[in-house]
Image (cartoon, chains in turn blue, red):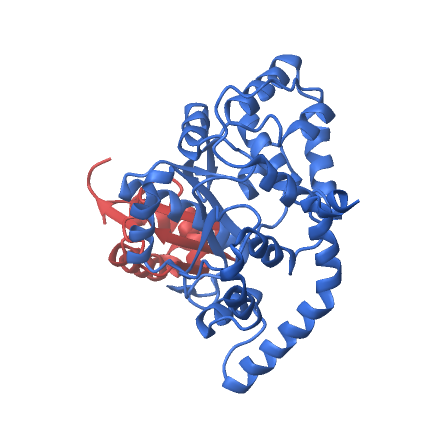
Length: 318
Length: 93
């Protein structure tokens, strides 16, 4: 024997280990808080044959919207803190909160709705929960969407970035798998889309796999225009700021521009921590701020063109 | 020792060639634990509950060693893990 070593994994928790274990932690925290939780994406999707096994970089869960605050409180108790910075604009509303733990190498993304399911998020969750199944990670049984619902969710995830090579490649891989389903299952997929307000947002995918596109059976609670803009966007860094500014009344725009150019220290350091670009000294933060401004300036022309195209201003002007 | 040693049912754990990493689900604030080297091998020997003597036999077979050569290490491992709450030792089956 080579000697037993038993001890905390504080410095040595590997990403693949952390992701699987983290799903189990999220599920237990939700159970402790009395919150319904579905394990989504990543290794669960792979187990269901909806993507190839591949390393995941974070833990993704979907929770009932009304239960999120209770889950957040429980996660805070056990060291998983959310950044608490939510003023970076997004084309679609905020849909998840990233929780981080000082000892873990991955984030826990807690979704309280999933973009593309445009019916009321609580109703969507109920639909997904009604048809839940189980998956096993880290020797723990987890509740997860059934493969039909999970395929819809994954397709929306990829369609959200359908202007990118990544989104197109992932969507096509998923479509190839789903297109092999029998007709009953494909019809189930079409009905699920209708029942979650996703008939329109999923339409390209449904047509690609041969599933019916059924008229929505629920009132949409989230703007399909926002979804379409997000799905068709070809630029990323600056566009959400332009979209957000366009939504504001004129008198709030000057302050917004100032904030866009020079975020609060807390906000800036949060985004930098996420990008893992900067830490430490005031001088390093200042240098990173200038770097961000230069990057934004270079990205502005393409983002502006993208914004005009997506908002229809070019068309209106002609 | 006649007590049956078994894994706590309230664990999440993953294993690879060289180690096992565990999280106590009844204490989510606790740090994950790593078992490496022979600790991982002894952990594997607890796949089925067993007395310390039985675990010694299993580990000895896995290492192709005499039982006496692994007995102290197995006993120490069990004692440590019971203290950490990841193994239980009781008389009930």
